[in-house]
Every structure is written in structure tokens, then in C-alpha cells.
Amino acid sequence: MKQYGKYFVGLLLIAAILSSLWCTGCSVREVFEGNKGQESFSFIYMGDSQADPETGDYSIWGQMLSQAAADESRPAFVMIGGDLVNDGSSQAEWDRFLAAAEPVRKKLPIYPAMGNHDNTALFKTIFALPENGPEGRQEAFYSFDYGDAHFTVMDSNVMGAANQEDIKWLEQDLSQTDKTYKIVMFHHPAYPAIEIPKDSQRAEVIRKNFVPVMERGGVDLVLGGHQHVYMRTHPLRDGQRSENGIVYLMGYSGGKQYSPGAYDYIACSVGGKPVYSIISVDAQGITIKTMDRSGQVLDFTGAPDISAEQQDWTITIKGDGIQGEKKFTLAELAAQPEAGFQHVYSTINNWPTARFYAVRGLTVRSILQAAGVLDTARAITFRSDDGYEMSFTREQLLDTPHYYYPRVKEGSPEGAQPVEPVIAYEYKEGSADMGAAAADAPCLIIGQRNLLEHTNPAFVVNVAEIIVSSRDPGQWEAATTFPTEGKIAAGESVKLQHKSSGLVKLHYTLDGTDPTELSPMYNPSTYQPELNLPIPVREDTIIKVLVSGYGKQNSAISSFTFEVQ
Image (cartoon, rainbow, N blue to C red; front, side):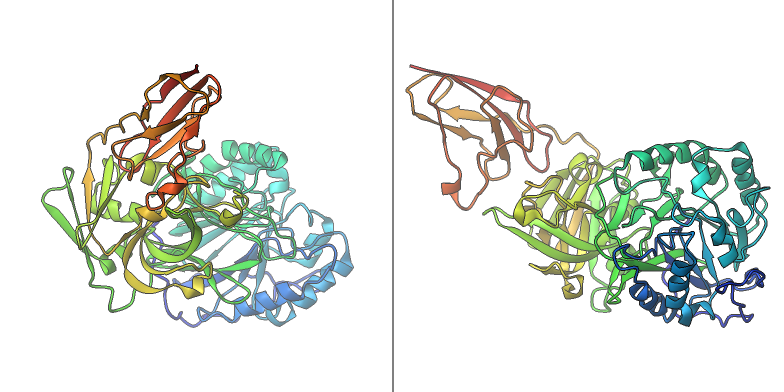
């Protein structure tokens, strides 16, 4: 995707007075055609606005719309990604929706996509939309220009059939514009946030037939909804992360709320609350800022707002893939594409005790990209200003997804959300409230690759250097036992041993299966050895052990046979 620009402050005054798009019971209205002269602008994006069917109440959504319209960026219009109401054939429900939007809809044009709940003839009587779609699908498919951006809206209710006429129309629509930025909106996701069989099947059809057209056509951003969560993907091309890919944004602003799943392509996700996004377009690119009802920023793709005191802090990057060494200030690193990331992180420390961190930081990925070693790095070491070091393999730090587990204290993976390894510049230990994050010394903070991973000991405070190697980091040595395998008295215990016991975890099984990093952990704590209990052997037993630890690849699985005598 084209580089997201820094979120701009202030906008040029809107050059033309915008006419209302729609009103209850009207059948002929003036259609908004966009502002072709304004280069910098913002607009509101909201996903499914439908009310909770139990209440039918749109007042909370209406309040959030008013809040969004009052944003300091002065949004020029509103886009809604379908499922505006629960029953699209009910005029009464449309009236409740329209009444909730009353303070805003007379000021700002509203562009909707047709969702599965409002896939009715009444949709087209409520809204008057550009009639430039394919034959027979006008107003369900349409496009318009605003500033230096071209907007294309499609009806995903029919995209599952992959009609050639619809595909050809999309191809022509994208090829005939000379605008720098291209934004597409349709209801059903091309990349789901929740595993629902029907949604996955439709997504496969969309990815096979429509996504290649959008990629060839230079689309930057795709807006959608349907699954009642907020989700933003990394830039994707051919299904893989790519700087020149498309970002897919799933919005949600209504009364039904679910929890997102865990997918490698997700950059940020939020469940359990309605949100809205302010999307800004200027000469530097597209910026997304997503907030909840309280105004708390949950996701922001612009350059991080680093304090003046922190901007000159320097991190040195060196290694066998770098000529000499490279020094970057935090301000310079913050200007990199996809630099900023904020989220709550879950962690387990060595005791083990679960806890949370509210974190704002610069992604390790963007820092390595700035140094030109992202693609070649095989081992990455972080060194503090006092010489403390922590090393990771590429797979551990970059290639395996990291997550925030909101229920880590209950031992449940439910609601896992993807997070990025970051050099944090604002953070608060013990808090799940992003508002609590405060400026502090640069600190490496990583998410958990699984619910049981002890990540807290890997955090590095006052990061001063990052040492990158393109060499194979090697493999941890296998574990040993005391006593050694062989005959053993009934009830005698076996200790697992490793010469780097403070740096590794020993995962074992007793049932003959191969252990993984989710298998029982022999040594959960470095500082409380009483938690590291020997294994009692009461019958013939095979103990299999896997050694894992940061900085090297997992060991080969070792097997020890004990015969009770």
C-alpha cells in the first residue's frame, strides 16, 4: 500500500457546499459528485451500524456518528460498509436509523454499501447514489471522485457469484481514473476476522476473482464489515505482506459485538465494542485513526507522536549485513512506513505471574527495514545501554505471529489479538488501559506466541543497540537427565538438566508423544526453583524432552527410557 502519511493537522476549507444525499420518504435527491479540487481531506468510515435486535436502539450509533463528525479534521462525508439496519425491508427501522443520524445527515453526504441485511429495494429509495454502475446494478455498484482519491463501491451480495460483467466493470472503473489513491468498499470481507464457513467461502471467491483486479488496478484500501469486529490487515499482495499491497479495513459501529480470531494477516483487531474511523488523505498518503465511544484511539497508522524529549534518543544498528553501523533517532524511525503500533500486551514472567502492559511503540519490523536488513536478518540481538542482551531468531521474532491474550490470567486463549514486537516509547506495566501508557526509556516488548510463553524476561529496557546477523543462529543442545536413563527404583524422581537452564524451557511428555512448546514445562521459573519439580517414575516410562529458548532454534527431541525395578 502507498505509504501512510503523517496525520495532518487542519484541512483546507471545503470548496463547495455539500447537498444532502438522502431523506426519509424522498425519491428524487441531488447526488453528491465529490470535490475534484481538494487534495487534502478526511472522511468517516463506519462498519455495520445495525442496532442490537433486542433493543432496536440506534441512539448510541447516532451519538458516535455525531462525535466522528465533530473530529478536528472536519470530515467531508461518511461511508458505511453495509448492514446499516437489521431489517432492510422495514421503513420503521430505517426511520429509527435516519432519526439517530439526524444531526449529521443534513450536513454530510453518506455513501453506503449494500449489506446482506439491507439488500432490499427500499435501500435505493432511501439513498440516491451515483448511477454509474454496471447495467442492472446501478446504485448497488457506483463510484465517485473526491480530491485526489477515487472511490468504488460494490454489492458483495452478488460478488460471490463472480459475474464477469461485475469484474469487467470494476476493472474499467479502476483503469479510467487518474486519481493517485483508490479506495474500494463492499460489505463481505475478502480477508475474514472470524472463521465462519459461509464467509470463508465467499472470501475465497472474492480473493480469486476481484482481489487480483484491485491489485492490478492500484487499489490502496478496501473497506468492509459484516463480522461485527474491527480489523485492519497488513498491506497484502497475493495473500502475503507487501509494502505495495492493499490494506483491508473491517469496521463495526453497531449493537452486536463479537471477538476477532487470530490470523497472520491481521495488523490490529478489536472486539466487543463499536468503533469509528477517521480516514485522512493527503499528499503523503492515507492515514487511519480508529476510536471508540470514549474517544480513545485504538488504532492509528500515522507517524507516532513521540515527545520532544524522546525524539533525539538514538539506537545503533549494526551487524554482518551492515556496512559499519547505522544510527537512528526515534524521530527518524517514527517516520518509517508502518512504524507505529499501540496495543495492550499480555505476558508471563518467570514466577510465573500473568500481567498486562499498555504499549505504544515503533515496530521492530520497520526499524530493520530502515536499516536495510529486514529481509536478510536471521538472528537479532537487543543490547541495553548497560550491556544486557537478549537474542532471537528471525522465526521467533518476526515470522511467527505474536498475540495479546486478554484472558491470559484465566489461562484461556479466547479473544487473542495480534500484536507486533516493538521498541516501546510509552508503556505502563500492569495496565490494560491504553490511556495509562506514559513516556519512558526505549524498551523491547514482545507479544506471546502461545498462551504459556514467558515473554516478560525477554523485555529489554533502555535499548541502545540492535545487532543483526545473517548467519544461522544454530540449535539448542538437547537436555540430559539425572539419573541417566536405565533401571530406576519405583517412586524415584528424575531431574531434567540443561547447561543453559536459565535461558531455556524444557518441555516434556510421559505418554510417548513428541513434546511441543505447549507441552508441560519442567522449569517454569528461574528465580523460584521450588516450582521446578522432578518427575516421579512409578512405572516403566519414556520421557521425551524438547528444549526451546530465545536466540536459537529448538533442540532435537531427546528420549529417555526408565525401567522400574
